[in-house]
Length: 528
Ligand code: GDP
Image (cartoon, rainbow, N blue to C red; front, side):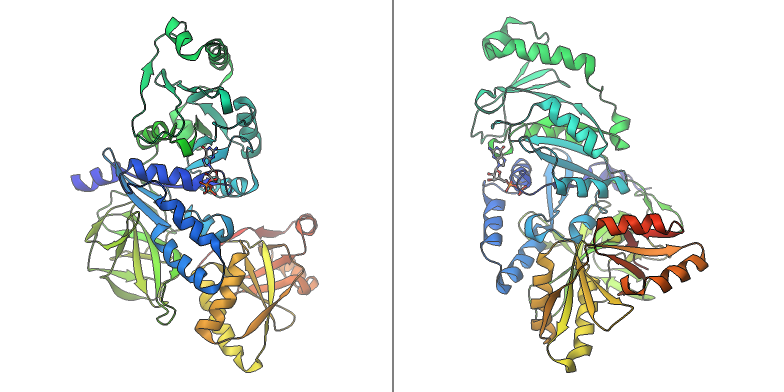
């Protein structure tokens, strides 16, 4: 194994941020990029977000798609570490991609609003992290405002997200009385100053909390801190590094992203503790990052800005070996050799052609529809990485074609758009309609606009009475036959021909799952 390869792996951190909209993901991202020197002006990430939400007409969506290509992966260097932050789109652009990005990270940071606690999107994203036992670090944000008590918040995380919390920092007051945090790990006091813009916050080392210095710094809140710490020493879960790596425990930090408070502290712990790229499973064997032979997989496909060209960018996560520009690899699914001539690497605000990249890095590959989500490229050995699934959609629409002569175009358009992974297309067993499923509703608008612009198809949506979908299979063919026969009206094939059950609501879904114990209802499905 080459020494350089091992070094490059050891210093890489590839992660995503999971949060509910408005918890502070964008603000935190911006501060992280600031520390990484990737941007030098506060507001750079923010202003793009404002643009994105100003309007939702087609051009804006197009622009947004272009912008989100550059924000999809933000690479920066911090200390000796190479950090790849993968964007997990939230708000209206919440989609299946948001889930699938999490299959390409090695760890995640969870942002929680201290007033709101655990919210619905955080729960959904945590569920995805659990599929691969992704290690999670938690940042409880907005301590400069009145929020819920830290113990209450940690209880809720433990209960709703089924992960043990261990505080590595502890807040002193909150809102108007927020004085700062005490770092339990390094035993240092960090005093809060609103509007913090400098990178260095003075740390005061406190050997003993009974030191009168603590009283002079914190006034009447010094005793509260002493009591809290005493309580924690008895009651809090001790930090166990192995448990963090196994994703059964999450270290918790408190701070205020907008005031840049507590951010660097978490970043320091993050780069030191978060896992470097690890082994990845394929259908046949486990691949280690330090294997000399290059390998990786596609986890996201994005149409490019220019609709006239219909070219797409495939986001490819390197799992092993070194990437060099112009290298030849096998496209196993198509049985073809391809040259990776034009790989792009994503920097915080720009794209640049690159000559080499390492495990954990994400490269962008231009293509004209020949690459699908889940595709694996290696120079020789036939491998197929697993764990990059489709996720069951949660919103549904029926597509009604206005011009019946365009059925072919509609079909082609829908299949190609489904391949990009933002929507899923179903053909019910009964009838000839298409049903589209998505994880976030903006995708319906984007799909309709793209059908019109890129495929000249005029169509409209009709509401349908579905709220959940599951791929169905069974080990007993007889049960499967019976299930299929009796439930034709609720069954459909997806774009790859897999049988899917469409349920009116969660209640019906649960009822069906109980009623048909021999049928397996899958919430995710891997591409073949
Ligand atoms: P996102 O939707 O998760 O990306 O959240 P944003 O970063 O856009 O933040 C949502 C709102 O919360 C914005 O108005 C931010 O200015 C505000 N915000 C973010 N961090 C803090 C914080 O530490 N304290 C306070 N008071 N507001 C914050």
